[in-house]
Length: 427
Ligand code: BGC
View 1 (spheres, rainbow, N blue to C red):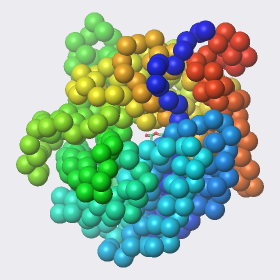
View 2 (cartoon, rainbow, N blue to C red):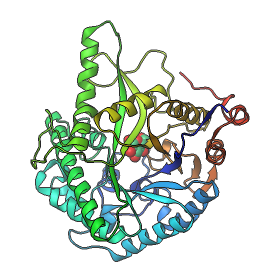
View 3 (spheres, rainbow, N blue to C red):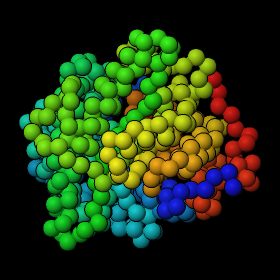
View 4 (cartoon, rainbow, N blue to C red):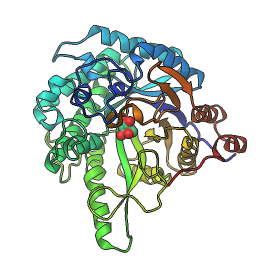
């Protein structure tokens, strides 16, 4: 055996509604598309047409032996106008969740994954604390609508990526470029996470359930100084890390809001997660504030460094903030030709399985190639290939490898030879 999965560890796949469903829902990413911001001009209105093909997608997942699936619900579909709930959308998600369970696939449900209804976006979204009640009303609606089918929830996906790319870097909607605003958005989202954490527990308890688990999906990367001997580089690495992920994780998990974040709702310190959701992709090597790349780093097709030990480093740091079981809620890579994804999966899983951290789940990002935000359809992260014209799904080599790992409970020498040995990353 090259490595065995940890006892009780389960492997699943991950997705987000706006990246797979399709349809002209009135949310900020359909709006961003209409403004011409998607690099390859593709539209989230097409994506995987999962709204129609969900049954086939779940059947495929089932045939691959996958038993846990992280999926999301689209707020703008459920509440297209403020206070007006769409019954058809509720029926759609209920049918999907019931079918998954019938196939033995357990949901981990994300409530917010980058998309806002336009009525919420237009009045300032998460940049304005006056909008917090609107988000909480949606969370309460969702738990009442789906709480009998779902026991595990992710409140918000990557508050730091949402805030940084939308309010500092400006690439994501609404395209702002202010550090102050980005910090404000993280403060508001951390408050939303904690209030949702408490609310979901309260509502599910009232419904008679005792098995509720709530967390959020934290995006973490490794920040390394370009020159370890240069104290300035070290300082920039520490500052970048704190601004991007350090402050927000402390706020969300423990209710301690340290600068640049503010405790807008006067939330008491506490323990606000039942599992640690970790989204891990890459490392930054910094010589100034912001992002950089190590010379000779191996990279994926989007130019992100591939650095497998980082998944353990980030998980360890999360665990130091709060001792909870770890769910890797995303890990994967853009490999358009599927020529190194099996190696990537192998190396990330191996380091996790050789460590002592309590990793209970690993959700690969992602199942089908899907609408990759600014990159549109041109960046493929899936273990299942999608022909966007015909919507035909084809399991990739990495998908077959992933299925085998699930069935065999780890990677045998034979599996390694068949899937991994011949693969190489590029510089
Ligand atoms: C997001 C996903 C995205 C993935 C790859 C994560 O930041 O949660 O929605 O597709 O990264 O870019």
